[in-house]
Image 1: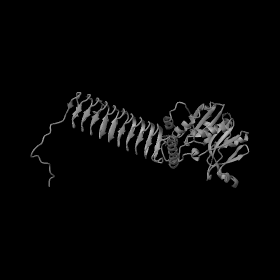
Image 2: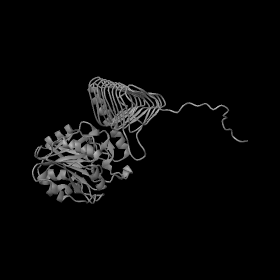
Image 3: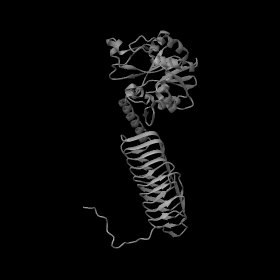
Image 4: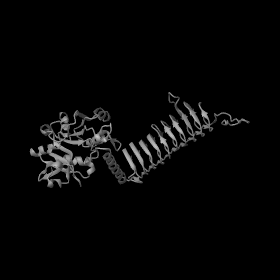
Length: 453
């Protein structure tokens, strides 16, 4: 579609959102509505994408930084026709222009492809059929296409019975835009220039307007308030859950999963209830995710089991690992195969080798742990002196006793054993036992202090 231009209207304030955030930046499925519309538009391979921005423009442009986007500013919000007029200097004379909206986030690529194809070298309009069309412009069809859009207040009884309505998404021959938009007037109750008035001009000039009915009303649904945003979020999540099920993923309850980004998976993946996936998440074959887990920008290899209430972010997990319950992998955590991370264990910016175990109540930060090592309960890598971070290195087949403090920078060599309760601040030699704790003393005759009076 090298002759296709796409203009996305995104200048509205969104008063009914009751938010300082521009309406088109409110998230759905983990990304701003406008970003989702741009992603859909880009799938059509247009020659250009122009976003018309206005309210909160600096914030909008700071959020949407895609280099292929061209920007047109609408300093005054004078209606959709006026908004498209602001984009005219960026549009060529050849080809056709598809108009989309930054607050209509769930339109499918296939629907827009059909809309563009239906236009040919003429015009096309996306319509919807609803049970209750009150308040919407009615589509009046003739023998050769759409003849008019009649606003609800102007309908006669026969027109008021029509259930096909205007969605606002349309395709127009670009060469005609300047003339048609120049003819628009704002002689209406809102004092705005309506883009839908172009339909009548197209018909007047003998250019057929082909109507394309959307398959699902939610594809054409816009967001004007938080309730509508929440309703479309549920539609999106239900659609994504359905796609996962059809692709072979086992979901304990399709109504209780949130994918707020991109989730890819292998075969025989199982996901329990109330899990949230953010950013880019990759699940290998046979991965199991327990209930109430949050995974953000994570890659998990085949056969790994994540127990309930675990939180993983910007981490890489090898094959056949066991994580959780109540485990936290923070950014930079990299686990090899067959690693065990147990309950209430936190790992940050650390590499853990094949088969090593960190099973209980432990903090591992800025560390490198070799293969086959065992880290006892309550171990802490003391990596921060209040100003700088330092690294702890633990070799292969080391055994760290419970309650050990490893004061970085420090090294525990291969095969070393650290006695429980030690504070290690110097190198622990290979294949030896190192103990660093005060001698136990019992004071006879000592009495516990008592409250006075």
